[in-house]
Length: 537
Image (tube, rainbow, N blue to C red; front, side):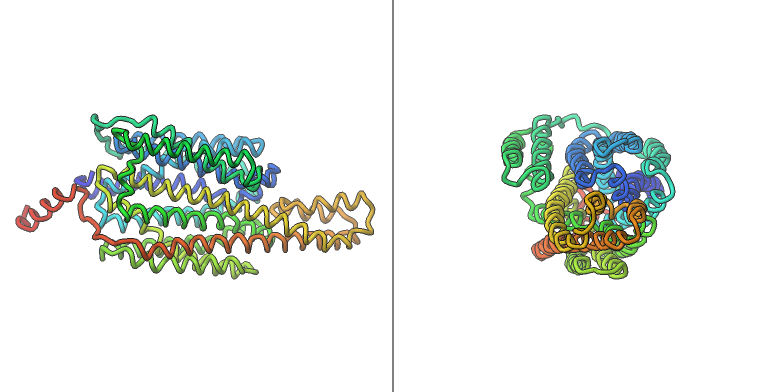
């Protein structure tokens, strides 16, 4: 597709960006509203599962589609991904309980994984690695714009409308994206010599499922040393070992092990894993601080994260153009990672909304500078024939990192909150000791962290008490806020340490020149020499 006219490429990019924005906005619009939705559905203990199931299904879909799109082309998978996402979003809006929401978010995740994997690979088909620097910035901007619009709109909707509309409002945009891809995206011929690696796909999926379930349930549903968790990790190890054996013998492996002979691919993927583990594991709790600790309504909570998105959009666009112009990328990774660490460190010690905004701005700058680099390094280091599976491997490691990070830091959050609640409630127990048993029982409802995430209900409960009891109720809520704040500090510090480890690895990333053609190396070199000898052609 590199030989297509500039006008046709722009039309295709418009279709791809529409599909990406549709998938992204449906994720960001629920970010600030999710704590309220979880509280309404009474599912605080299952909060991380709503995020984890999405990441798990999108991770599996991403890696499986990577190789398949190399064989069959990108178009059928882009169309299929949009349809699956549409169905998942519609069903999410019909959810009557937390378990239905989790199941339907899993369907959404499948669609999102297919869309994101195929969209990023399609850009690689259209443009050379040197040009992709600019387009990586543009695609990051699409995510950034959805991050600006989504949280604010989601907060307003959940305050003024039924929460189900959060999942339905952008469904027409999905239909537009489907029509654009159908009409504009070129169809490519199937590679007849390629076969599908069914066995490798099966054991890769089983490995991912067992691994992520183990991390998700450890420390929450089961103890880390319980037979269930040990069994899941053992299953992940065995399935992973079988997967490696299958891939070494497969004619067309779903994840070629030869990719990881390149130190650039390996280091970039490890950095992506660690970066997403720390970042995603911590950032999902920003809403807990803004709404739970500071008591900000969802409508206004979106304004706190908006500066991060704006900073990321601006910096990713600027840095993308600078990468295309200079052909250099490592310097931007080395600059962006420390800025991200600084932003997360501020999050750990923030004690006001304004400090949270400052942390978001700094983190967004670092994210915009460093994030576009690592997919570009992987695509530039592999043969164009492996573009789909290489891009999918990059997203696989990022999704694994994000999912494991959410699970591990979710365990940190639960453990720390439980400990802090016991300590705070023990300190405040004397105040309610003189009250009758019925009043103490009513006050115990305020010790549920779900209450902090549903401010209207919290005010209603406090107002229902007699005037002399309301003061005690306010003290209990204050202790609950303190416990939540202390627990969030621990979570953000862990996230900072993980991102810092990714920053250290960046120093070991080898930089090679960005190719100016998608042709195989010798063919591309011949083409460039011909252009120099015959400039009039």
